[in-house]
Image 1 (cartoon, one colour):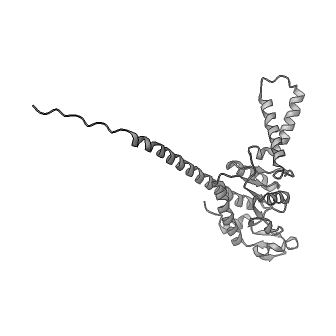
Image 2: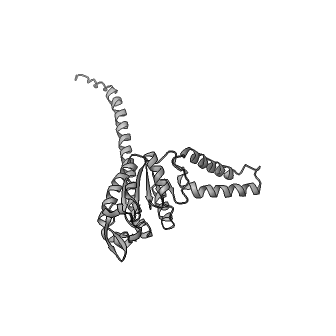
Image 3: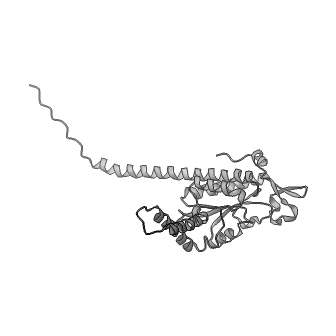
Length: 263
């Protein structure tokens, strides 16, 4: 589970920030220099941020809690959705619905509605639906799937969110802060890193930069899930051994065989 190297981050363009006139002064500790009016990010700080965020995300996954990935930018959608599915985590890569976390009960009802439509359309025995009604239901279902498909299996609020471009996803950040949910995020030079619990200073516009960083986050989550599986297996083994021990102790010893005296 090796972190991306300095060279790999450099090749991905992770060091390229925004124009100086667009910068957020609070990003000053993460900026290495300015070149031709563009701020360059200190990749040593990027690596340190990735390491700190990775350790925390690994523990979240190990505890069995969920991490929601949020990335509605075009260049991040596919990478993030594939990653989230590979580790069985919820994700939002289309429009963020206001109240998606702060009004979670309403969102759950919409997800339930989508699942009910799925069951209705899949039931071949239902003959009361006309072709027009079926088409209308299909369109409604596809609309719900586009926005809510990534959180269809999320039964409760996540323990953390990982955000690509905290400036762009400011509504998600605001909701997470209100609920006390830990925030991890890629933070570019135009953003405020103090809005995030675990900032990773890097280019949040280049697809290669996004993929390099999020893939590492996926690896640490996989490691945490694997540790959880091993821990549960060990607990099952201990319980099985503990249950078998009293039975072994209670088993009576076989009587010694009698021997006939020699004639």
